[in-house]
Image (cartoon, rainbow, N blue to C red):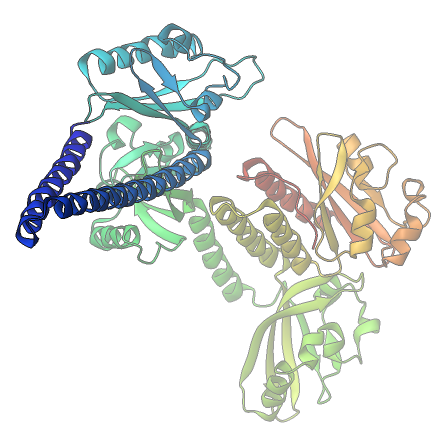
Length: 618
């Protein structure tokens, strides 16, 4: 207001000064030009007209310049208002002010859920719109702003119109401006609040999951590697109670003294975006100083305060290590005392054709001696006829190699593939091969099964998609038994079976069976899911459960199927394993036992996966 008055006074003073100069200077000039009174009067009239014309031009210029400037200011104000409204709309924000009463913008009223309000609300009306638990806090904060001029910054929840309505959270801000007025903003922060709640719930679920896992020791550490989480399995594994472990550093508790510095440096580098601590087998120590072998995995998370936390997941391998060591000692003694007594012994002629076999060969391969003698060794072990094993056999026969020892696949008479350990020696004078064959199929399966277990655990901890984990389980089983085609189907809430993984089945067939009902007499998987028991269909073309699917299966090259359901800890069916064959056949007890182990992996993946959902087929 004062600046506007100063500008007007300045303009009036300039006008008065110019007018006075015009009058006095023009009169002086006229008195010097002539002494004729009549002529001077005429000049005075002309001078007055010129003054009026100059004044009009001055007023015209001043008025035009002021209007132009006012128009520019109004345009800038309008642009600013549009930008403000646009930014408030994008940020879900409104404004308000207080001068004897509250004045809320249209955007602010929309956020408050009162866009059709005809008059501005009072303080009591505003408080009635809030959740009852928020009203006292907001009232005190507003009164502190209005009376004590303290800055306002509170988070409030609106009163929901009904129970099913989503929760709405607002951030109220306010302060006193330079002119002494009170103004502020209101912003919708519902999305942020929902995200914070989801994060807290997820963190709570994760801690409950780790805390109740009996066989997996989980520890949480802060940036200084101090314990912030210690589950019961960690107490059982390392001997420290929760009270003893909390607040102490990782290396003081479970790391052997010689490795403490290395572990601390590796953990610090990881937190500084260095290489992560690799998962694997490691030797740690218990409270009593005794060693303990574990498979240790690590992951980093950020808590609700954006603080970095390190979690270590350990699986006890002590018993496995003892068993492995005992197995090695036993095998060594066995080889020393009864070399080859349990192995298949064979001799080939110079053409690599079998000319001698012991009874163990028949037990391992399933072929009788009459069916095997005279046959080339590569018929039973096709890998020997392929490069580079064929070259190694030639080098062995020529004397370049003293012996050859390897693992390969043996095709049995029943069509199954077994893993065997083959050892060959050459007799140079006759150039014949003397060899032994040891069945290591169960050991290989155990190793692959343990590898599959570790892979599933690592993928679960890394939060891989469920479909990717199930596909890995299916492929692992098919690698162990190449004659099998595996499908994993998951039971949904509508009592329908959905494809979780089927990497080797035709897409057309998968699309046809996706969504079949879990009912008795519906295929193998439908019947298994409904009954909870093993179902075997040796020949799909004649089995009554497959009368509606036999033609579809024949087009897919499938002629036998058996299904095994997998369940949760309470006995509820989660899904089924479907095992298909390209010819009519019946599974062996070993096949059923193997698939049973893989069903446990599928059940584990389904129960502990971070995002359980049916995988989409590519």
